Length: 163
Ligand SMILES: [Zn+2]
Image (tube, rainbow, N blue to C red; front, side, top):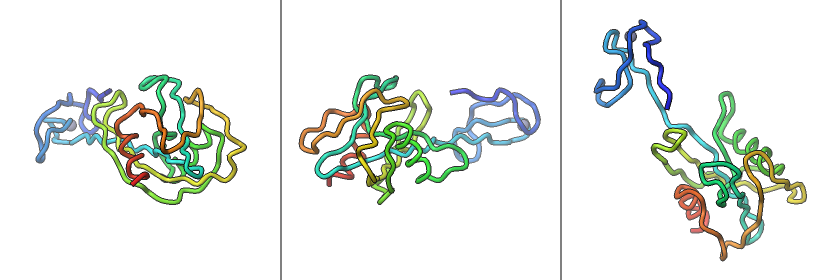
């Protein structure tokens, strides 16, 4: 994680320590708290009958393993915007978000703390599917014969869908 060394309020040096009920990054001089928050991600369950779409990850973390499509929300987009943008980037598919399945918190990843939000997406036209962005291969797996997934939070979100 990168931290700003100097306080954006007063210019003094920031520190990690206890303030206002928690351990936070803050300035002891002017008491400004420099809040840090988990990054929200849209994590996608795309069913086709009794099959589910998985992508083989082209990069670390989890390189070479199977995972759910998705990625981080950007500024100025909604969760659903992020879901459909990531879907397009990674699979060239388009669709509609039909429901929020549940969430999973992952602490201390190489991206910091992440809040994964599982969304079900119904795909408009599967013929358009092309692997792209940070996915090297896409495949529809029978829900009765799914591989191990790259991340525990993907497995958890999958379990919300299957139950
Ligand atoms: Zn300060």
